[in-house]
Image 1 (tube, rainbow, N blue to C red):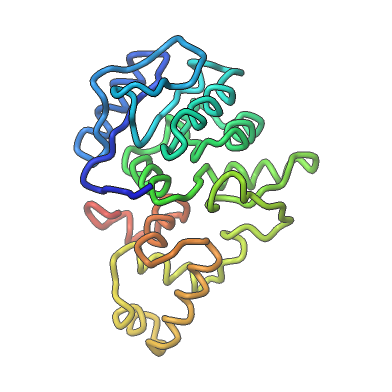
Image 2: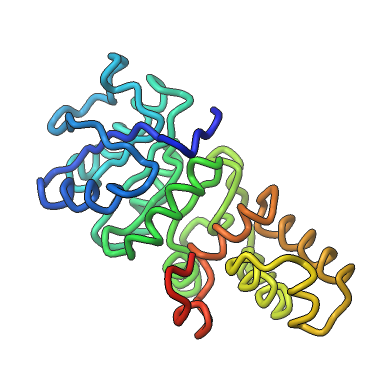
Length: 243
């Protein structure tokens, strides 16, 4: 599905008006256009009528609880080209795994910062699968019996692969992390090379390795991935409107 950044038709499935209005406010000035009609109550997936022909569905896990995975599965069957993101109040590994395996394209927390949520949704629309990497990795380190899946970003639920300790975050070198922070700031290769005191060709090699490790196609997607998943440096936090 082509990603038209000018307008992404979005439908909300929320249990409470507070969450629904909060999401609408968060997305108000973004390119995610929320439908005026919102749907609650029914367990079956979003129907195929014209008013629900959204490119993105955001589903509150509290609306269907244990039935969320079934709702996601039904919605993906009815809208195979649409993206589905599940919103939860707190992290649950079991819930995250069930909705991703059902076909969800993302699992986010309602407590995430507004800017980060929009970046999550951008990544989802670009074809990535996103979820809270730090919490996921913490679950892996404390529970040896949980399924091990490739963390943070993949090409889709069907391609989540088993790993041990080799998630993208763990395999990035300190130099690659530095370059990712530079990409977040929109710096060109020449500026990055000057800042890190290395050859521009070296920067290009590192960027190629970064794209391969985090499984994105270009430096713009890499920057968006970094915003959602890397701790911000002091410079990033101090810079007004940092994205």
